[in-house]
Amino acid sequence: MDPFTIAALIALAVAGSGAAAVGVVARRRASKRQAMREAVRAPVPCGSHAPVSLFDVFWDLGASEFALAMMAHRDVLLSDADDVARLVHTLGAEIERSGGRAAYIAEQLEAIEEYYRDHNAAGDRRKILSLAAPLRKMLPAAGAASAGSQVDVSYAGQITGGVADRDAWRSGTQVGPLSQGEQDHEIDVDAAVATDVQTLLKTLFGSGSILKEAKRWFAMRTARKLRDDLDSGLEELQRIFAAHLRTEPQCLANLHDSARRWEAEGVRVAALKADATYKDQSWAMCADVLADEAITMADALARTAHSNVDETLARIESLATSNEAAMAGYLVYVNRYAFFAGHTGLCEDVVGRVDRALASLATELRRLSQEGVL
Image 1 (tube, helix red, strand yellow):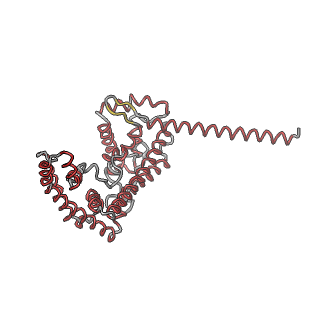
Image 2: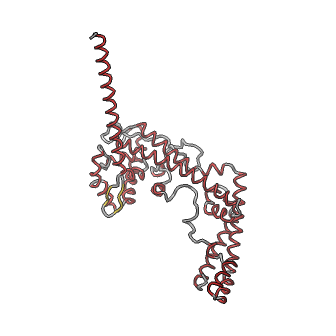
C-alpha cells in the first residue's frame, strides 16, 4: 500500500478516536451534571420535620456567593452526586436540631449577616474565604429607578422579595403582585343574598311553606340593599382605576416591577456562575448546578409574575365590558395597593365606602345566619 495512503488512514483513525473520546467525555460530564441536578433537588429527610432539598437551602439563603460560603462551611455542598445520602447526617441533622427549616435558615442568615458586615468592613485589605464583596447591588433599592445603588449594610436586604417571601414564591402561593381575591374573601356575597323571585316561587311550590319563605324574602331586603351599596362602591372604584390607567402610563410599568426584579435576580445569579470564584473547590459542580437551578427558578417566577399582571388586567377589562363592573371593581379593590401605588389619594374615599359596605354586609349576614334565615 502507498505510504501516503497508510499515513492518511492512520491520521483518520487517530482523529476518529480523538473525536470519540471527546464525545465520551462530554456524555459523561452531562451525565454527572444531571445526577448532580437530581441530587441537589432530592428531598433530604429531617427527622420529624418536612424534608428539605439542598436547593431549598441555597434559595432561602439568597442564592449568593455568601450562601455558598456558608453552605461549604457547614459541609453540606456535594463533591459527588452519590454523596447525597451524607446530607441526612449533616443538613438533615442540623435542621432537626434547629427545630425546623425556618429556624435553621434564620440561624444561617444570622451567621451570614455577621460574615457580611465583617466582609464589607474589611474591604480590599482582607478577604474572607476568598470572596469579594460586590460594590454595587444588582437590583435597584426601594424607590430607585435603576440598579447601581451602594451595597446595603444588611445582607438580607439584598434578597429579592425578602427572606420570608421566597418560599411562598416557590410553592406558588404567591405568584405576583396581584391577587384574584379568592383567598382574601372566601364568602360569596352574591350567593348568600341572591334570593330572587324565581327562586322564591320555586321554593314555595316545592316546599309548600309559603309563610316561611315569605318571611325569609323580607328578612333578606336589608342584605340586598347593602349588597347594592357595595356594588355601587366597587363600580365607582373600577371607573377610577380605568381613568388612572389612561392618565398615568407609569402605573402599568410599576405593576411589572416584581417581574423585573426576578429577571434581575436571574441576571445576578448568572453573573455569580460566570465569575465561578469557586471553580477550584471540590464542590464546584454542585455550586454550578445550584446556580443553574436558581436561574431557572428566577426566570420562571418572572414569567409567572408578568403573566399574572397581564391576566388580571385583562380579566378586569373583560368584566367591566360585560356588565360585571362590580366584580371588576372587586379585583381592583383587593389589588388597590399595587394599582394606586403612590396615588392612594385617588381612591381613598371610595375604598372607605367599600370597607364600610363590606363591614355592614358582613354584620347583616351574621345576624341572618344567627336567626336561621341563611
